[in-house]
Amino acid sequence: QGQLVESGGGLVQAGGSLRLSCAASGRTFSSYAMGWFRQAPGKEREFVAAISWRGRTTKYADVVKGRFTISRDNAKNTVYLQMNSLKPEDTAVYYCASAIFGTIATKTNEYGYWGQGTQVTVSS
Image (cartoon, rainbow, N blue to C red; front, side, top):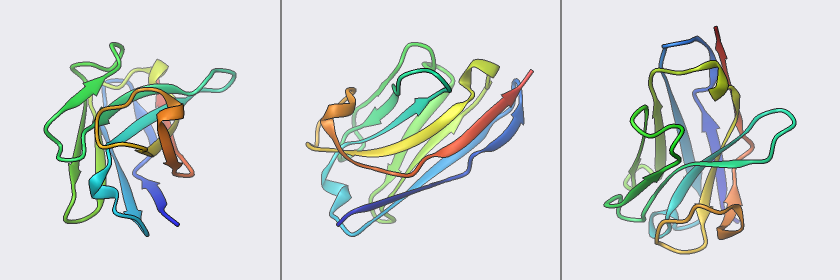
């Protein structure tokens, strides 16, 4: 069984930065695309960013493009999400996920493993 554990969430002022980490274990996660999603209270889980299995291809939601950067270190089985210029509307629980395939995926049903989530709160 694979396991994903997120860390790095917290409270930050608008304009600030956070870096989320996702440590993977129990599965060859390096062979699969990885993604970050988020869910705000009362809203559906939405796609934030994804990275292919080698890290050569990335994709971002329009609302975070230019502010967030996804990366991965397959030697450490870890995926990162660097978040800069944070806005109050970025407040949500952020989830790391492992895709079913190695190529970029943006839909929740294209992911088979999920972490427990980490809270990000951006104050105005």
